[in-house]
Every structure is written in structure tokens, then in C-alpha cells.
Length: 373
Image (cartoon, rainbow, N blue to C red; front, side):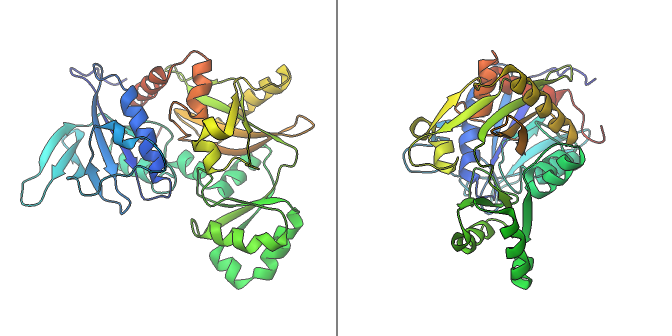
């Protein structure tokens, strides 16, 4: 058990990053910083610019909102910030040209709201483990497995958890043996989905209806990731999600399942449908499911969380097939986390407000040591 602090815990909210989900990370960070109780915690906003530069960002969360057609971004021209390991603790230092570094003080916990590669994939988690800094969410292994959808399938299948059949295509393999790749893909049958293996927010994903659309879909996905995953479409399935949240006592809790119903011209749950939800989607919380199916889904969501050694939080996405069998689509260790995102809404329906959810995750991080556990 960690000794109680004699001051307010300092939380560094880290956001932005080098992935194509940079803007969504910024939006999430603004919501999280607004929700953190400043009477209870000190907050330090740390942005990672698109080129990887770490900066001390502004605490003005209004500039991080998704308004109109403009996407927010980290200001890479702000003062640089670095994480230092001092005697018994980690601290943040700010450096500016022609000035000596200024230490901001000890950091007690990092709240990484990074989406995609170089953040949600175990990379920042590994850095924080090396520095001995506590952080919100999954550890290195769970983050890496869950980010790579191809390896996630391997792990879940080994645990006896059903997933959709798929084919992994790397850039090298596509160039060297295109005929073999096409044959394996054709065996899946159409329609199918082509997606970056390590992406998110539906960026780079295409629904492919026949062979004439395949090459363009692969090129689009490869622009995001040299490793892509081609999956059979879950024809006739409903997309239903379930939230997982640890209690402060270590119990794995699950929310009521929730369903996304897409409206308008959207054939599937693409970027616009996800982040302009008032225009393009309707949410059913809880999802209209037979009680037995809902209970089975919640149990399976907890099994998925345990199978990848999850910590803190996760969102497990399911396909409910026409016969009410369940197939896991994917697992998100840092799910969409704005107040309008599905994960916080599921817990709000369970009586856990957005502010309470943020506080729970910080408290979980504060009571967990880094290192082997």
C-alpha cells in the first residue's frame, strides 16, 4: 500500500501524439482535464506534437474542442517538457532556449489519453514503467496486444473466445506474393473489411463489396500501417459494446451492453458516425437484448479483459450474430473517452458520472505500483 501524500496528487494529462488519432486524443484530453476536480488534484497538461516533441500545453481546454470542421492539435512551439527521474520520484522539467531547465515538481500519476500507435500500444506505458511513474490504464502487454488486432485474435482464440476470421497482409508480403494474398482474402468471401492492424477511430478502414474494391482498400489501410488485417464481414450482425472497469478493490465490473444504431448514409460505423454522433448515430443504453444474451456478453467481456491482462478500463466490442451467438470484434484499452463517447455513457447509465469515472481511474493508478505485478 502506498503512503498517503501530504499534498494534492499531481496528475500529468498526456495527449496528442504521432498517430493519425492526434486530434481525437486532444478532444479527449480537454474533456478529462475539465472533469478532474482541481480541489483534489493538481493538473499538468503535457502535449505530444505530431513530430513527437513533448511540450507544456495550455490549460485552456476550449482550444481542444471539436468545433465545426477544425480539428484540434498540440502546439509544438510551446516550451519543451521532459520527464526526469530524481531521488525516489519522477518530475517534469520545462526547457526553453537560452534558459536553464525549470522543474515543475513531482508527478504522481500520468493520465495518458493517447489513441493509436506510439501511445495506446504499450510504448508510453513502457517508458513510464522504466521511469517508475504510475499511470492510468492497461500495462505494456495488454496495451500492445489490444492495439494489434491480429495478435489480439491470436490471444483471444487461444483463450477459447470467438473472433471473426481474418488474413494478415504486410506491405512486404503484398509485394512479394500478391496472388497468395488474394487467394486467402477471396476465401474469406465478400463483403469484407480491410483495416490497419494497429489503428483506431475507423481511420483507414474500408468495407469491400467485391474484388474490384480490394486494391484501393489495401492502399488506404497501408497508408496508416504497413501491417493490415482483412476480415470477413459479420453479415446481419448487430454491433454491441460492453464497458469494463476495475473497482478500487480489484473486482472486474461490467456495464450493461449498449448498441450503436447508424443512421443516414453510413453503411458502417466510420469516423463521421463516431465523432458526429448527434447527426449520424443513435445509442441504445442498455441494448435491447434477451437477458441471457446480455448476461453472456458481460461475462465474456470480463473474460476478454482477463485474457489480455487488462487493468483499469476497457471497452469490448461484440458482434451479436443473427442466432444470438457472440463474436468479439475488438478490445480497446483506451476507448473513446469524451462525455459523448460510448464508454462514459455506458457507465453514466450505471450511475457513474464522467467526473466520478475520471476520479476512479486516477485513484486506481495511484494505488498501483509500477513494475511486475
